[in-house]
Image 1: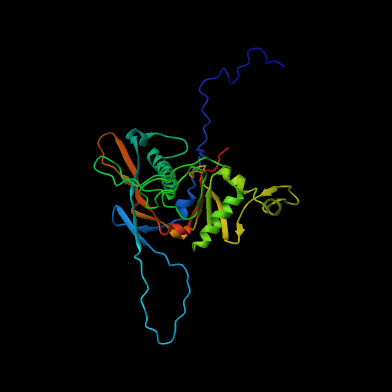
Image 2: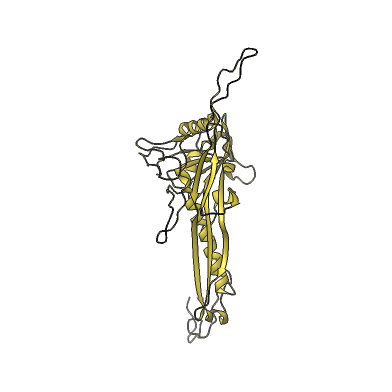
Amino acid sequence: MAQPTNTFDSYDATGIREDLSDVITNISPEETPFFSRTKKRKASNTYVEHLTDTLRASGDNAHIEGDDTTADAMTAATRQGNYTQIFKNAVVIPDTDVGLDKAGRSREIAYQTLKIAAEQKKDVERALFLNNARVAGSSTLAREMAGAPTWLTSNTVAGSGGADATGDGTDIRTDGTQAAFSQTNFDSAMQSIWENGGNPDTVYLSAFQMNVALGFTGNNNQRSSVQAGDERVVKSLAVYVTPWGTVQFQPSRECRGRDVHIFQDDKWEVAELRPMKNVALSKTGDSEKRQVVYEATLLCLNEAAHGAVYDCTTS
């Protein structure tokens, strides 16, 4: 087939208007499950403290009639704290933008501000999971919060050569030799949490470790099925039931691939000194400036309520 002679087609024409969709498609992940689920409370200082306590072990308790009563030896509650961390992002858009006719958004400043706010939430989620010691900060050094791994000591299972942190946020845990995430290790951590009084409800882990969990014994046969009619294969792990409690597996893209965290969500708090806010900055020229700022810290209300399987292989 060939065009007739002197056909004037679209390749020859000029002035054809562009066809640009009026929708901006962005599939970058923005979920922050740990940050979203954790209870928020008001902070009133850059160093936020709380108290933790424990009960003594059970013992024989029998007394004769009329015996004098002797007071038990008491221990004081433990005082712990974490520093607030400032998260800040900004955008600067020239005032020329006001007169432009753009696809997908009316004003660039509004679109970009929403974008950096979503990005900042991901930074917060990462900081909560990070194996990072707290930093008091100074006039030349930024304050930093201690992340979750620095608090956990009672119910951790880890590879050889690894070591837990002190448990007060002042130092990081030492990574050890990696080994495959296993149901045996997971159940061991769950049992330890139960023995220490915890009631974990959520397991935060990477996509790779989630696939390992999907293969736990007793799960595949019960949870992998073909739906009649449309032949969809369903393989899910809504909950995992053990003698030590029932937990939900929640993948998080910001959780380190080598870490599997087993948390009792109500025993964590995020203390906010300054809730996330969109602020207009002073105008210094022919542009508009806005920043999104958030200042908060992570509080581990009682580390014995949580556990982890650390040093898991990631491939």
